Image 1: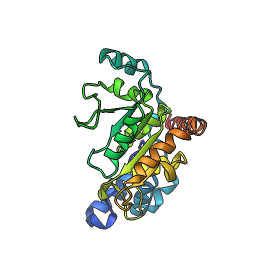
Image 2: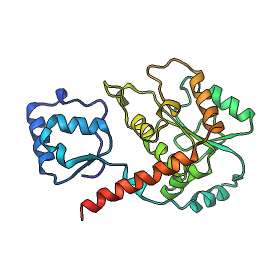
Image 3: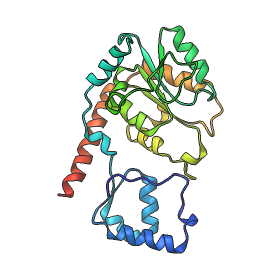
Length: 242
């Protein structure tokens, strides 16, 4: 099993006895189990405590791959977007409290905003026509990413781009206040500064302050060392399988 994750709103109590038994038997059948986060580890361990000896938390497989940044550069050139203009990747619903104010603030400082999920009046560039390799490398052209997505957070980190990640849906957060994105940022040591549970924080200024701080105090050395650690840990896990 490679870096699997459960849904954050799933608990064992929600499962029927037959489903729990099937889950336990399935986990038992694996020789090695790699899970992506503590909530998945705890879930499977609760279903079948005997499998803990062959289960470990492994990084997302994405960390093992290198990204060619030339795809993003060629894409921007094709779209006649000046690669020297500072761009913020806006990957959250634009109606979230604080987002529009942050956009106005950064535009006044000369930044432009790009979006690849929908067309919105807040952004200067829609990148809906990106291919997968272009998407994976576009984060290298951003000065900052504001997102609510797990893999946008990963690819920002992989491209050494500051990222602010927000959970705004209760279904993405467990009863113990865990989520995939919060666990990811915690593993990089930046959860306290770069993650927001917007379901409990009613502070629309948080986004703007966090974005400013991420630009003013970049910690590229910490990110780089953590990326190397994630890659080494995942590759070490793979070597167990051969």
